[in-house]
Amino acid sequence: MIQALLPLLPLLLAPQEEDFPLTGLPVQDAVVDAIYAEENIQVMETLDELVNGIGPRLSSSSNLQEASEWAADKFRQYGLQNVRLEQWGTFPVGFDRRHKEGRLVAPIKMPLVFTTNAWTAGTKGPVRSTVLRAPRNAEALTKLEGSFKGAWVVCPNTRPRWESDRDDFRSQLGRFLDEEEIAGILRPTSGELVRTGGSYRIEADNLPTRINIMVRRDQIRDILRFIEEGHAVEAEFDIENQFRPGPVPLYNVIGEIPGIEKPEEIVLFGGHLDSWDGATGTQDNGTGTATTLEAARLLGAMNLKPRRTIRFMLWTGEEQGLLGSRAYIEQHPEETDLISGVWVHDGGTNACHGVQATPALQPIFEEVFAPIIAHTADAEDEVLRFRIVETEALPAGVGSDHDSYLSAGVPGFFWVQGGRTSYTYIHHTQHDYYEEAVSEYEVFTARMVASAAWRLANLPEMLPRHDIRGVRRRLGVYLEGDTSVVRGLVDNGLATEAGILVGDQILRIDGAKIDNSRDLRRALRAAGNKKDVSILRAGAEMSFWFDWENDEAGSTEE
Image (cartoon, rainbow, N blue to C red; front, side):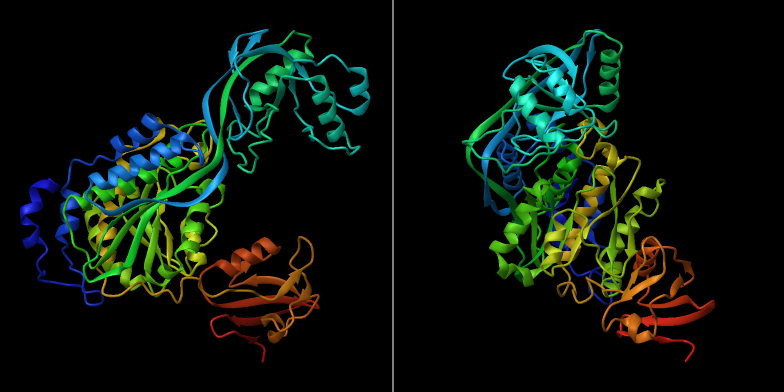
């Protein structure tokens, strides 16, 4: 369909009969109409190529390098310009998880659901051995000396402290297990979800050698029950973890549709390409990678000429602390004032069906997203209807790459998502596979991102950023323990100005009951920069008002 429209695009992009008054964007947008008319949406095929064809993409892994080159090739195939892999840093050691299999072989046969952290040792082939419970106290260490050699040791409660000369039991246990030359330790997960993590801060000349396996909690319970019943318990693990000498370069992947009027100004859309490697990294964040690539394909196929540059970006090192996005900003400080906004898809497969808007952004976004809202308004499933969500400040601390830009003063957006998938169920767990992705949500998001990118790139001006952080609301009090009684006041704070005293009990804020500091924070986060506060003093209730917008406060009794 997109290809069929190409000869008509000059006519489609001609001035429309009706434009919105604030932004000048067309009410009826031919490009958006073409995107929503396109039936050949390839987002699921792209996702399949990434997560099943390449696999998980741990930072410093061979898979991530392959995925970075693959994504850059996709951008080139789609007709994007300035395509590049831009190095942002290095990791000291490369790590590839090749194979893992574990099973209980006695007293019953049972496959085990487990993981090992990234950048940790494997088994160097299958290791079958007795499973024993770790000694429970210092006295047992002496009594059981010499009985653990080569065993898999279950540590259900006390975690050994390695390479420590302290006298606490954890350190004693660590030294004991090292001296016994065990096969490795088995620890229970905190729940039924098996989450994979790890630290890349290791040295090539001092690689990890101890094997530390996290087994699903219910299976550890079964193993301990067998041991307590007196059964001989055996397990076999085959874990192929490979280290590669570093430093290993890491890259962000970038592709652009250059602007023709304001090419130096940028609207940026993306997600992180890297993942943890306990599964295939489908929803964290193969789904966001796939929608970014599909949006690029849809726009690239139309040979569009936006007012400002549309940049698609896939960051890496996100799982280790937003490293790729933070480094890019540090390496390109000149771009900070030229990026109109950053929109990130990193919340899994659920539909990106909303965008947050501050008061200054609200009227702009109503016109920008109007065609998207119109195209999705009749969807039977409410999840598949786009909406604008009012907020007084763009939320920071979500934990994705838009946070890096928000910290630099750039409007950063984490799409509002909704759907039937539980992100907690797949987030860094054994369940993050392709089969859990929802096609209709991915198609919805790809169309929306492409349409939004086009519309936002054609705004007459960059987005306002004066209110993206909102007004910081602080009462200026310290509470006593888990109560709402004031034990102290911030010097020159609004509570002091209002006349609140130590010993006052905060009863309500805008009618919401306050019992402790959690209630206080929740009430202050609620909408409104002006709030009424009720307190109890010497048995009498008093009322105060706070105005954070004007930095004022006082008593309504005056």
